[in-house]
Length: 127
Image 1 (cartoon, helix red, strand yellow):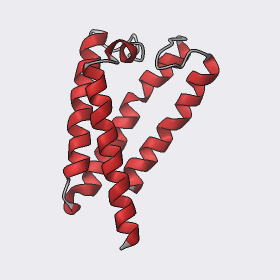
Image 2 (tube, one colour):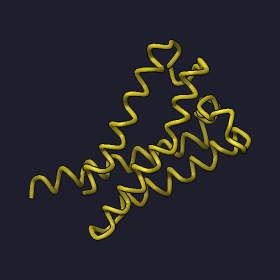
Image 3 (tube, rainbow, N blue to C red):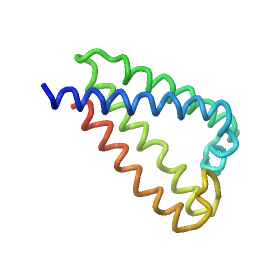
């Protein structure tokens, strides 16, 4: 029972974090997120940020509200989302784009190491 409570708390925290990140995409951090959009994305950087923000709000809401029977699917989708946006983190590092206080190559590289943790978090909290 205790393990279920921890998993639920982890899932809800991840979902709430995604909702917050999505809201920040659409509001106060919009410009910072634009620096993470790789140049090869065929959309305007602002459009990409808006669409990804909407996706994060939806995904976070699903994680928070998902019934037990759909948790695994929600977690898999969240993990896939974190994989899909990883090229943005790579682009920020390889193109020396500063945002979110990541203003040195070392800080931008360290940020790359956190993406696998998000993928693990999404899967572990839903499986």
